[in-house]
Length: 238
Image (tube, rainbow, N blue to C red; front, side, top):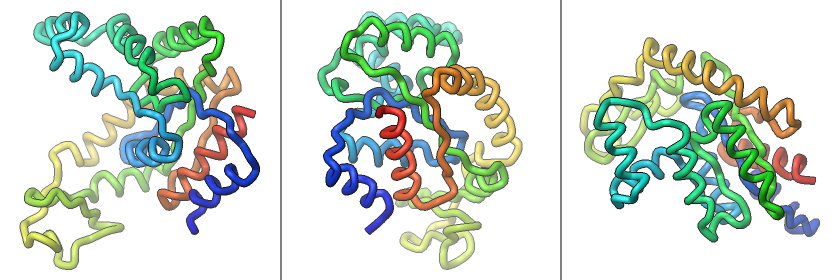
């Protein structure tokens, strides 16, 4: 039985029924944030809320917010925090968010964090945001990103360092030549890391100061990382 399953079963056995509430999942490029979000969605039965998905959905559905965003993006401008906040506010009114939700890409800035905290504080039953960061050593992240190779036919993903194909550069299933994404280079990775750290640092400090921040070791198995996140959330919800 995995450590993740053990954590879940232990919670059931001891009768712990604390709701996860809103969870902000943080992680540098290559840290496995997307994978962990899916694990937590399955465990807790709560939705993952991605601002990128919200933006695309509003544009595709032609909502008033979507039309405004499309016009702004059409001018080559960034969608302002105020508009993103409105989209998030509408999404949080849906009944599937009652027990909690995994926040992906929001709050990305300190003003967004302040807005969300303020909104939740006005709701009697709403739990505050807990931020959990998945930490992976820089060199390990670099290997994960720059070593990534994709099969253009079946979309299988390999890594030349930790999960190489049987034949160098060839997909095990399709026999097709593997490709490296244009942005999976060391130069692009360094730029993304600088941008991530500059933008995320104030948000991390904000939740750390509030006593609602935890960091888990991301250089472990998927199950072990998920178990660490569950334990951190339960600890801070007590």
